[in-house]
Image (cartoon, rainbow, N blue to C red; front, side, top):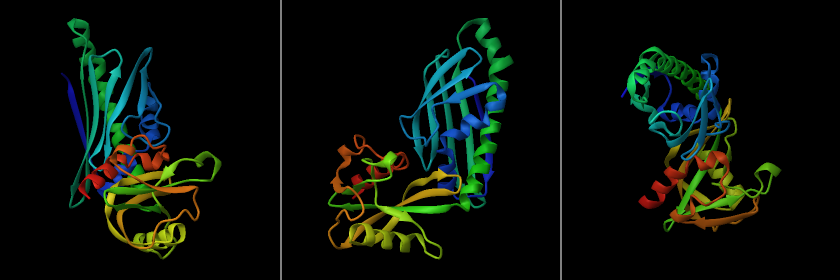
Length: 273
């Protein structure tokens, strides 16, 4: 079973590098000049997202199995190989974040399969890993200086507070955690306190960050923190509705794409409350 690895040190926080990995367009653009086409990851990667790849006439489908602060992984579920797995693991170091990219696969049996491994598979896989590492490094360094939208994962009695968007049209009806943009001169905590007072009429106490930074645009990312209510009862002042949900509701909710990425972290938060 071939197994190739490549490592890159990125001078950025691990949560920011994890955010760069969630950019679904990154892998597609990085391998464009290698004769490899990848589609389906046009937005933000999350667990269960599907990627479709092709090398010449050979096609396959991969499903994302992990997308969090530890990295990203995807596995082949339909294609010409018995097994193919792509993984990127993140290790926090004193000098930045170590990005460990790996690909492993099982080739069809017989002499042809072994020849393909040596002549085509290993060389192409190594080029993909190198291209991927460079793209992730560049994207992470962009996000270091990006503007920030903050969100509050407010938990009470094992339930999470969510709010339903009323606008713009493409987001109407979808759900998110409360929050908003960090204004110039504000800290993340100050911005969240202001947004929760304006949107919900409540005061909160901020906790630790939940999940990775999530890229919204080249120059904008979402950062969500755990929070608890200090005073007030939430009301939908600027949204269609607010509600409390439990762990069993997380997967079924029609989330905004950026918030859906955070579902595994939100689930852990609810179970630890």
